[in-house]
Length: 629
Image (cartoon, rainbow, N blue to C red; front, side):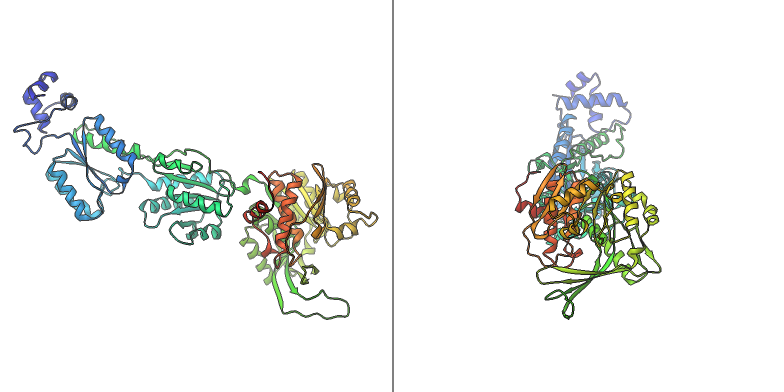
């Protein structure tokens, strides 16, 4: 194809074609220039002879001088397709790793007299080399460079978007999985932080989880996030492997959103919710921008807008605590003074010990922490004194993520105390100094009635005044909340309280005391049902428990644990029972799981330190029981 033939097809003079291909077309109108350029590209015309030697002659070749982005196939493929569609070929330089190689690539592109270059500078200092392109009249489109801030994939924006997805799904305890030294991770983390700030959530360094650190997963447990944003898909795969080892379920236990580079990655693990990085769209944008400059069309494309659609929700859901309704606990709050003895004290005998512990306790506090450890939102209503012990209580509850707004101080009382003697076989005796617990009144319950809204279960014990227990039971019933009552430190219970009780959970001795006229466990359970309870569970220590409920009646065995301290068995049992009933489990299965929580608790010293977390509990159940979901 000759210049004369091009001129004939275009309907212009040879001189006009020569001026256009040699960039001397200042006086030629845009319509003519565009028509001639299209014909030149369509017929693959290349200037020859003297025209070839003119430095300003068009070559219809673009150069690619890339750093990090060169590793993404979708970005390169999109540039290639856009260039070919517009009649251009590409000259791709090797990815540079040092400034010397970068300069060599720049001079090579100048020698080939490319029309334009897509350039990702290695550093800000590299911008000094732009003069080589300017001297040759080569158009440059910068990517990921301060020289053109609008021509980049905004990973900060993607980080913000990923964090917002987690927040919109109810996650407030979140983390960001990153790669040390990665610019992308740094930008994603910036967007993550900004999103938290805009939504009133305080960022802490524990939320950043660098995948390269040997103990990176320790941050997962110290921070206990319910949702994680990952800057790299490969890091997400490593996370999924680690979660599988510790029996975390995604998304039931942990939601995960990950950035994704290319479609092939999802072949490895299709169960991850991903934000596809728009490399294809960015490649098309960059190439079209450069061609527009080379051909002087004046069609500026504006700033590249980075929007990523969530490709699936396979690993994204509400936090476990949101899927199960909140649980409200009304009960005693003590400081437990535990003494380990060879044998329990007897009248007229003195026992001594060298081992003891002092930690917060009380049935209300124990059950609240037990619920929180199992991943459920929980609020505790109770009273403490105006003493140092009350500060210890508040600190312990907050550390265990218990809502403490319902705990109030009584200025004229001391915080309750429980003096616990624990025998070597785990049996115990307890003496309680009631303290502020006896000052919990019906009006205190009414003051926090808003806590019952959107709750699923209310846990009650009778170590606080019965009037307060009854008031809580009535408010719970009005709000559609089910009541679970543990009778403790009482020898009589009346039908006017039992009418509000959905699940009544005495132990064997408490059942005997409250119903002495009936000799057997099954008969006592029936008696409590006749008094108004809807379900009765009588715990029998190492013999398990007896359940009489509308959906199940029968004995369930105890979990096989060696007892060390039986003090908190009932509290661990009731906390787990409420959590799993709230999650939709039937009475039999919930009680079976609760028996494992109780068994785990009695195998360790103390109560609050021995309460099990949900993942450990379900790991124990999976090892010992063959259940489906």
